[in-house]
Image 1 (cartoon, rainbow, N blue to C red):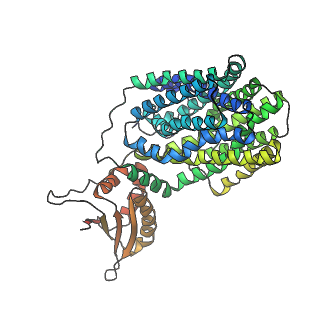
Image 2: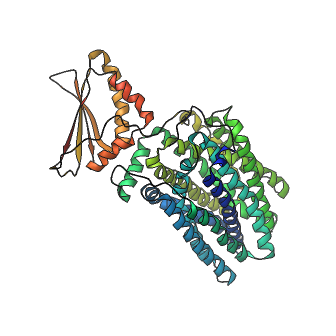
Image 3: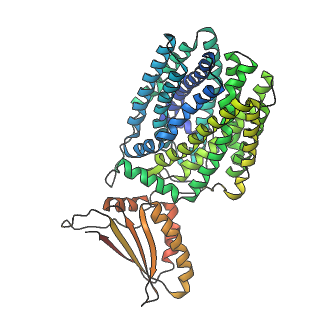
Length: 525
């Protein structure tokens, strides 16, 4: 793990020094162009099959729902198994499904329901891969280059958003939807070749590997006892619920105004071009304003763009609105991703990212369905106005749920104690009761209680349950901390999960004590 600097790098292009990151970024451009061609083709095919706005909006729901359903198991697997192998297998699955979609469409056998099912299947591969894919980013670049690497990913993705829809519109207009789907299937080949050649170092574990169920519980527990992560998740989920309306209803809006797939491609291309410009400006903005301010301004600007889409009906004006919307989109989406990456240590990173995607894609799925239903009953323009107004109002959350400052936050492992040694004659299973006896002078009692309250949160975050603090009635200066751990292996993992960011709390605790704490480990018989 690279050493943590005091501040992120201001160089946008420095992450490209990593050959693996550079090759994956290049391959992703091609793959994401194919993905956007798939999305445009699916939405336009649904319209061409005479499906209503609800079916069109359900395309985005079918794309987002797998991220909600598969997020937790995908994140757990991404932290337990080899991440390179997971990416290789999921990319192979997506090639197979994309080829099936193309074949059925070219044969004239596609129907609205079948299109939704296959869209769900294709997105399932992406959903299972995404936590792992995002978790490997800190393995490919230095910690100080992480914001720039995330911005480059945003530029790559939105460059593909700018090129893919326009290319899809031309391909659909002149060659048919089936050829657009076939192009998407071919686009996965480059990523598979790069991943196949990637020599990822073997990760050595000091403890036994976690089970799927145990890893999932650990992820939920980590998020529950990490206030900073929770604030980011709430802000991103509410923001995305309202922001989902613009992209979910854009195919219906484009069809009503232009009646051509090229018009839809132009609007999405404008959105992607705006996102690229926004990513370029974002690096400079981060040097002058806080992440909280940039996120709030970005969501408000996106809300205004959504409302403008409900009022304007000229294709060229809508194109300009989409440029603004794309720049606003990347400004808050990129920072949400960087916040999560900076707040999750390596042992749980894929799982925390999976929970973030669960919240994010769940909000997109729920929002797409809500705004699609509102558009079907009250009209597309009304849905845009309500969604845009809601996005603007959601910025009030910045007053109550400020995003954490991750500058200087070091989540590399910190091991202040050696793992406890157990005699060979003991068959240690679980659950395990751990007790720590403290000798606290009266003048440090208030500080001690405040520190222990924070320490209790860290214990539970890293695996403890039934945490408590007791005072000895016979010796007033003696305090006993107790907590349960599900198994001996899980307690050993606790020793591996403390981070350098926790060391300050440990130092404050030691300053409140007369002597070194007495630690005991007891196992239930």
